[in-house]
Image (cartoon, rainbow, N blue to C red; front, side, top):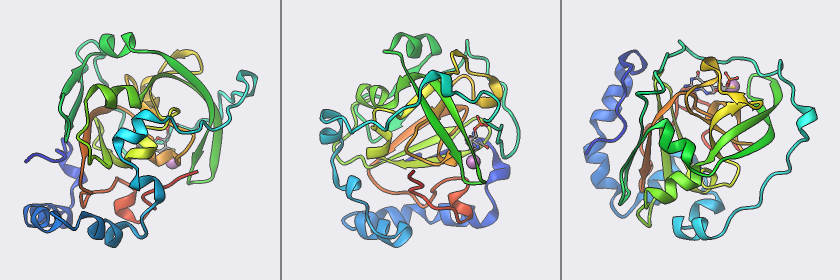
Length: 241
Ligand SMILES: Nc1nc2c(c(=O)[nH]1)N[C@H]1C(S)=C(S)[C@@H](COP(=O)(O)O)O[C@H]1N2
Ligand SMILES: [Mo]
C-alpha cells in the first residue's frame, strides 16, 4: 500500500528510511491496537480524536472569534520556508486526495475555485515567536474531505507539499470550519512564497501545521510513524492554539 510518497529524497535521512521500511510489519501490529500505538507515539489521546468523521461532518465545531479586516497586519507575516520555494504551474496543478476514502479526487484549481468560497481574518502564530493577523480566502477543507467520502474510521489527515514538507493533523482539527485550503491572502491571489496555488490556513494550530504548496492529501485510519517535518525533529504534534 502506498502511504506518503516523498518527492524530495533529501528530506529522508537514513534513519527515516529504516523506520519506513518497518512499516509493513508495523501495519500488522496496528491491527486492533492502533489506539495504543498512537498513545505511545503522541502521548495522551485528545478528546476530539474520539469523535467519528461522520459526527464531525454532521456537527460543525464552534468557530474561533475573528478580527476586523482593519486589523490585518500585511507586513507582519514573515515568509518562513525551510528549504526552497517551488514554482507550481497552477494551470497544470492537481490536488490529489486519497487514502482511506471511497471517492479519490484529482482537483484542478478551476474545480477548487468552483467550490464554496469563504474567508477569515485570523492570527497566524509561529512557534519562533512572531504572529500576524492575516485574511485568508479559499475553501473549507471539510468540503474537500466530505467530497472524498472518508471511511468511517478515518482519524488522521496527511498533507504533502511540493517542497518536500509534510504534515499530519487529527481529523477533528482538519474538519474545523476555519481550517481552509487557501488560495487568497489579504484579498489578493495567494503569493507564491506564501504557498500558491494552495495552502492550509487555520486559527486553531501553530504556523508549522499550515502547509504551503499542498499537492496531496492522504486520509488515514491509522497513525503513521511519520508525523511532520518539524514534529519529526521534536516539535509537538497537536500544536493547538
Ligand atoms: N511547505 C511548507 N509549508 C510550510 C513551511 C515550509 O517551510 N514549507 N513553513 C511553515 C511555518 S514554520 C510557518 S510559520 C508558515 C509560514 O507561512 P508564510 O511563509 O506564508 O508566512 O508556513 C508553514 N508551512
Ligand atoms: Mo512557523
